[in-house]
Amino acid sequence: MKRTEQPPVNANDATLTGLATAQTGSRVADNTPNAPANPGFDLVMEAVAGSALGSSGAPYTLTISAIDLTAVSQPWPPQTLHQAFDAASGWQLSGTGPDYQCTQTFPIAVPGGGPGGPLAGHTLRCVASLVSRGAQIASIIHSNPFVLV
Image (cartoon, rainbow, N blue to C red; front, side, top):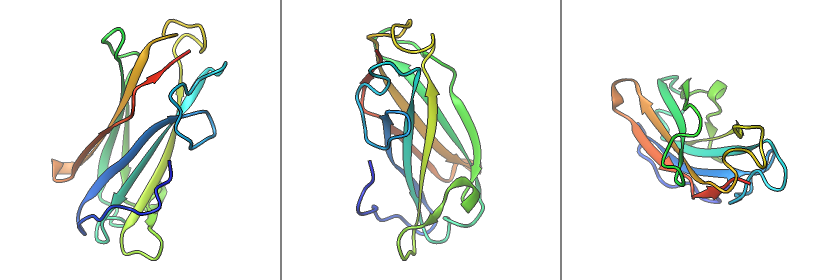
C-alpha cells in the first residue's frame, strides 16, 4: 500500500490518504484479508500533514469503523483513538520534508473467531475519520470492499 509520492498538503492541514485491509503482518492490500484461516486481519491507514501541523502536538480523534454491506449493519464497535500530531502517534518527516507522513496498522479481530464465523461470505468496508479539536481539520476515507471467509 506504500505510495511513492505523497500528495501536497497545506502547512496547517492533514489528509487521510490510504485505508486498506491486509493479511496480519502485511501491508499488501487484500480483498480477503482473513483467508485462508486467520482469526483477524490488519487495517493499514496512511496520512499526510503539512509542515506546521505534522509535529505540532495538536490533538485529534481518529475513528475507525466497519460497515457490513451484506447485512447493512455495523459488525463490531468502532475504535476511537485520541492522538496528536507528534512522533508518539507515528508522525515523521516525509523524506527530507517539509511535510509529515504517518502509517498505522490496526489489528482487527473477526467476530466469531474467524473463518466460518457469522460474517463468513459477507462483504464489508472500513471507514476512518480524522477530526481535530474544534473540527478545523477533518478528513474521511474508506477502504475498498472486502470479503470475510
